[in-house]
Image 1 (tube, rainbow, N blue to C red):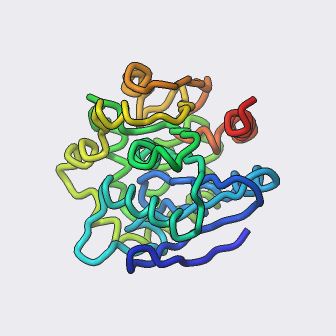
Image 2 (cartoon, rainbow, N blue to C red; image 1 turned 90 degrees about the horizontal axis):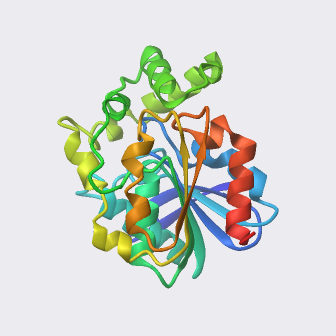
Length: 268
């Protein structure tokens, strides 16, 4: 695995990449302190023998600054993701996105149907009519403190044994490093930012690649019922629901998630 920075439309984008084979773009979610490497390093390591995986920091997260005059949003993140894959020379690729990243993945597939081969939205936002949940509102509002990090992780994860001292310390440091940029992304009232990430029926109808929705049955941040309308609006779609799982299937059910992803991307 390697970390590098690529200039996309005049703005730097930091990324983690690794592996050999067909390209897979991995898009992280919106929680404070979230980065591409933090969200997807285990997936890059697990699947790098069969695919070339690219996990960028979205604009405003990690080491990717917001473009001048921008405050982020679905259009910015989608265009930057498309521009990054162009800059890296990938003409054909799958897209996996967690939470906010799932909405970006679907928007990218709609905008670039000639390039996107598969889409895997995980615990995704973006479904028509999905409101801002109280848990997501609290996640976006989490202060960059140890208590704030612990509370946020407790909301994201069903398995509270994963909220370890080391996990809290790492997330606290990441939240503090990105505090200034994150403060501009989802200021209150926050329902408008959830609405910005909602995809229209027309956009969803433009997604022609096969879609695998992966969701935790006990997800409180993007509750399962709010995601089900995607099944009515996507042309080629299937869903896998993991029991005893919160908002982070890639962490709480890591082995099962990687098997699901590998099988779907390989067409088995």
